[in-house]
Image 1 (cartoon, rainbow, N blue to C red):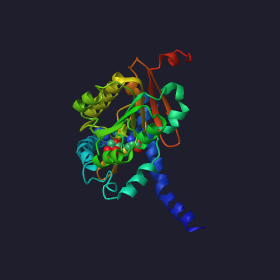
Image 2: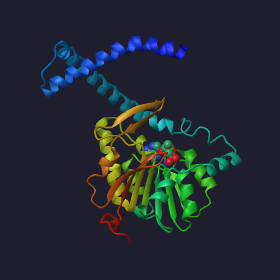
Image 3: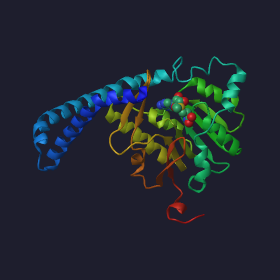
Image 4: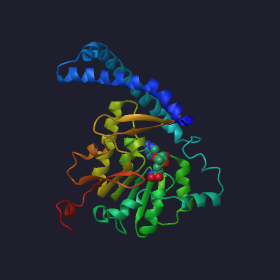
Length: 297
Ligand SMILES: C[S@@+](CC[C@H](N)C(=O)[O-])C[C@H]1O[C@@H](n2cnc3c(N)ncnc32)[C@H](O)[C@@H]1O
């Protein structure tokens, strides 16, 4: 037997009984919840499993709420000056910066090609990219839509300055802005735009608690839907219905997974659908009424 096989067998001796106990434990809780006839094992485990389950749930909730509180502060540091977010951008020379800008790939491009009718992107339309980063999507939009205005905002000054330095499209303008700040959103969304994009940013938007996070995320989607003329695209990971789950990714960055589609559910000015490429998932909200009733232009 190979050393890998021996290792797996040794671990199996420990893990198999643990797995059997976990199954009995879950089963005891299930049988009690459903009011089924309990086995002897169910009866023995019913109370300890119930107590341990409550304890674990409380610990998990407590730990999640601490993660929200701590990382809501750390997030600004991660993307702030000298944060890890874009630490390699500022020290690079101008050739390296241009090579970086031009070597970027847009996560949005796949959806522009595959959902052309639904998105209705057209040359001359106004685009707003919130959390534009170093211009991954701006660069692609600029190349495709020479007569458009393309506005980008980002939290990080180095990212914004890279786009300013390298993008030559005359209709592109980028500035600093924090999507989580309602005052900023009021200003950024005051100008009419056709299409709004948030690409791998929504998972980074959260408040210091679960409740504030849900309210913040719903408020942002409500604002985007109200302000867009034609479409909103959220590219990101998308979770199940239920409360947001926050996951620590690194020292100063945590990410949120939740039911992004759910935030669009009460919006009747358009329709949302989910799609995916091999790089990301997308929630596409379109106000194109001609397509929503099944007709084509
Ligand atoms: C993972 S990068 C994605 C960049 C780009 N949109 C893309 O698709 O590649 C996340 C970007 O979101 C920005 N960001 C994070 N939180 C933000 C906020 N509250 N307001 C504005 N930008 C934010 C970060 O500075 C970073 O540039």
